[in-house]
Every structure is written in C-alpha cells, then in structure tokens.
Length: 389
Image 1 (spheres, helix red, strand yellow):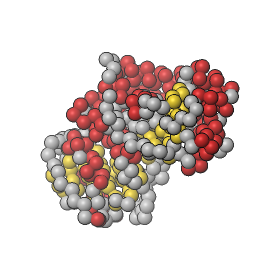
Image 2 (cartoon, rainbow, N blue to C red):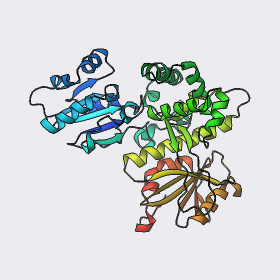
Image 3 (cartoon, one colour):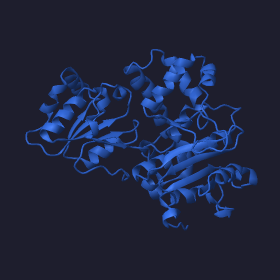
Image 4 (cartoon, one colour):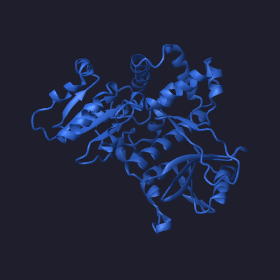
C-alpha cells in the first residue's frame, strides 16, 4: 500500500470525502487501528442505526478516548445529529467518510457547524506512487489504487462503472431509468475536457434536457464528475461562460468512453492526458493546501489555455500537448493569455524530452513536469521563490 499524502488533524473531528475506490477505507484501517469502526455498507450495522440513530452511543466503549469512524455516513444522514451531540457532550472524535454528497446537501442535514473539518481523498498521485509511477499505464488505466493491485485492471474498471449504476444510482433511487442513465454516461464521455453543451448531450442520448441536467448533478454528487469553470477575472476579451466537464479519473473516462473504428486514437489519448494532469493538479493543490482555484480560459473566437491556477501564489497557465514537436500555433493561447494577464507563469507540457523556452513560456516534458509538480506549484516569484530544474 502506498503512503497517502492526506494529513488529517490530530484531535479534531473531520469529514473525509472521495469517490468509491480511492482508498478511504484502506487508509482509515491502516492509520486508525484502535478506532471504533462502523461501516454503513454492512446490512446489520445499517439496519440497526437506521431504525434508531441514537443507538450510536451503544457502539462506543465506556471512557473511550480514540477515534470513531462512520464509514459512508451519507447512508444515514441523521447520524450526524448524534455525532454532533457526542462531540459536544463527550468530546468524542469522529471521522465521517462519504462517497456521495447528494443526501448531505439537504438543507436539513447537520454538517456539524464547523466542529468537523473537511478533507478529500483523490486517486493516487505521482508523489504517492513515486518510482512505481508509469505514465503510459496511468494514461490507459488511471490511478485508482486497485489498478496497481488487480491482475485485470480493465475488468476492475468495467465492474466499477457497473457498481455505480447498480449500487449507488439504483439503491439511492436517483433515477428509475438505468438504461437511459447508462446511455447518458457514454454520451457524457464525449464531453470530457470540453465546454459542456447540455442540449447537445440531451440530443445525442435522446433524453430530455432537464433530465440530463439532473444526471450531471448526480455525477457531481457521487464525486465521479467535476466541472471546471471558465476564468473570467478582469477579462479584456469576450470569453466562453459555460463550464468544462471531467470524469474524475483517466481510467474511468477511458472505460466509459466508447471506441470504434472511426475514433481517432490521438483524440482519445489527448483528452486522457489532459484528464490525468487535471486530477494531479486537483490532488496536489488539495493535499498541500496550496490555495489555488482551478479554471480554464477560452475566448469566443477559440483561443484557449487548458488550465489556469489562480491564488495567493499568483497565476499559473498550462497548456497540454501530447505531441513531441511544438510549433507557434501551439503557443498562441498561452501568449495571448500572458499578454492579457502580465505576471502569469506560463507552461506548455508536451511529449518531447527537452526543456526549452519561448519568450517567457516554459516548455517542459510531461514526465518532467509530473516529477516536479509540487516545486512548480509552490514556486512564488513574487516572494522570491525561484524555480530551477
């Protein structure tokens, strides 16, 4: 098992969110061995606490001073009232995990009013896998922990998708038409890394637009779909206003995405690479609390930059190219963005093997970028933090 980057508080309750399969339960059992562990996916535990949430205190030994874990707490949101009471009354420490935010978004659900911090578990990162990291494997199979352990990662990923449809969607009663939802999943994969056009998705899968909007909300609530907003701060040009859509892991995207003889491999591979960089940026920014907000930039005339990181450490702009040779056209979006936003740190990631520079743009091999991702994101020229490779 790889050492995870998440760094939880020592003496304060916290939520731990993340999609199924990112390793939350494995990490908890490895790092909190003395905890009282209650898994709400177990039928007996679920039924006991669903009928009487106040039975929670009966699972806790007298004078207990260690952690209490409620795994998949979204299954019984009423338990949060009991946890709140026990934190206040007994000073207990809870770890509350969830792989869905749908029921927890209800305005009547008690999210402990600041008495519990919030953390997230992501797919494995290059900084966690280290010497075992294989870029080509990550592009094909993604970085869910089981991909590194299963004999047949493809079979595991196919089962993962089926599990979400049958277990999460069906059991939670999120939709009555599983066939339509499965059709939507495939159609949505064609929007990966693209500005989202909900009407077009609805038309392609022959589902009403309002239903498709709800389906996208379901993906976001289940934490398996993310929306990347456009960067519009102090815009000097007319920019697109719609969000981009991403499945959270490259392997999940490639498993859902249908592939036929008319599909260009380089198109799918290019989006997979962009997805991989996106999930790395999200995870490293989150784990190290770097404080960036992530965006993309695109004008209505088509100039674009794949990722904009904006925060107290400044602005970083990144364009992703799979090919090994770069031309002036590839740099057009970055050059225009840097002209509009002086002081930005622009990078172009590409499939070559040499670092070179064009104006103030650092053109860096993908693998070199991943090896130095934390150094790049932590660099702060404004405060004198220099960057050398």
